[in-house]
Image (tube, rainbow, N blue to C red; front, top):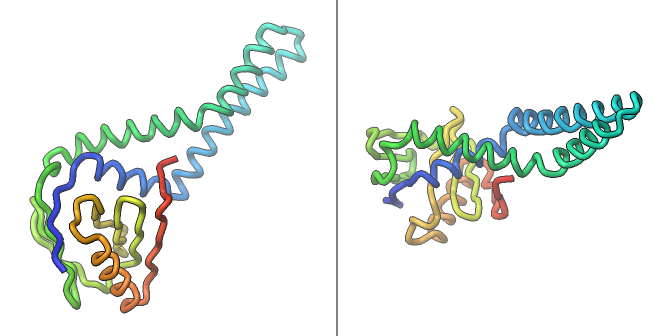
Length: 181
């Protein structure tokens, strides 16, 4: 099966957000930042309560509660903007360029603006399907980005990838409800 499509900035962004959402280190970092910031403000409100300064007590108490509730939304937007700027700088010459992927019995052949490569099928670790993408993951840590919206026959591709996973005895992960959070 041969696929031909063009990747845009959003495709690279969704890939980066997917990787970040699956990284234990990034999940831990986001949670730690959120909890430390909230706890610090609530601890300061406790100190001002003890000292009898009601204005600062209420200020830090309300700030701590608001941060506890709303910081994850801010953080989500902040990470998305950060990755968007990174992608705009790093991949700007790859937007709109044609990419070709050919699945054969032993290799995946890719051709794009950066060149040609052959990836042994044994180097596939798993394939993840989200609502909008397929992300075949390589043992080296890289991924291939395959946007469903830019593929003519998504069901045929899904069947090919499932069969490939079955033949290689690797996981085909269906995460159809994945969304950046």
